[in-house]
Amino acid sequence: MRKRLITEVAGVIGAPVEQVWQALLKDRPAYEMKTELGDHTVAYQGGWWYRGEWSVTRHPEGARVDHRVYSVAGPYWAVALANNLFIGFGERTRESFAKGIARIANQLGCSARLT
View 1 (spheres, rainbow, N blue to C red):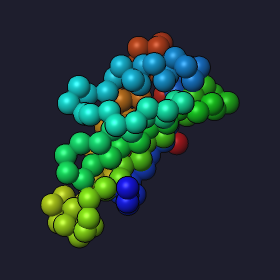
View 2 (cartoon, helix red, strand yellow):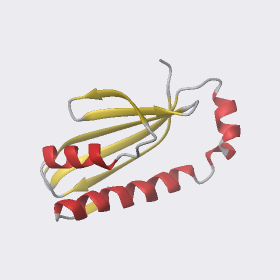
View 3 (cartoon, rainbow, N blue to C red):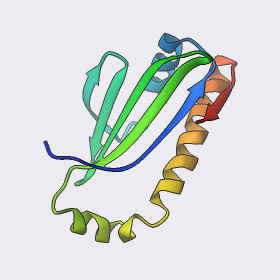
View 4 (tube, rainbow, N blue to C red):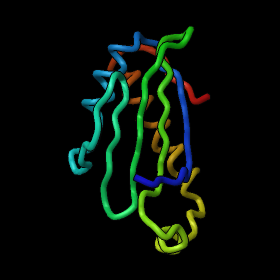
């Protein structure tokens, strides 16, 4: 599969990796189709171009969560045009990600921050 990185964001949640991982899996929208599940890594692919990859790793403050969004459709220019050249996409992804890790941190009774 050919994929092109569109944007990426990361944050830290002040809880153990396994707790964050389980909360992350429960927090995903039902409409997204899970395509791959690995050791603390999950990928969701939906629509005609979107692939989101999430991973949870150890961090001195708890767990680091990384999220990367890829285009898996070609040609890239068609994806970009269909998404308004991705203007503001990175910021919207960052805002959504920040809300998501804050929601998980709230469930786990700990802190969260973007890196």
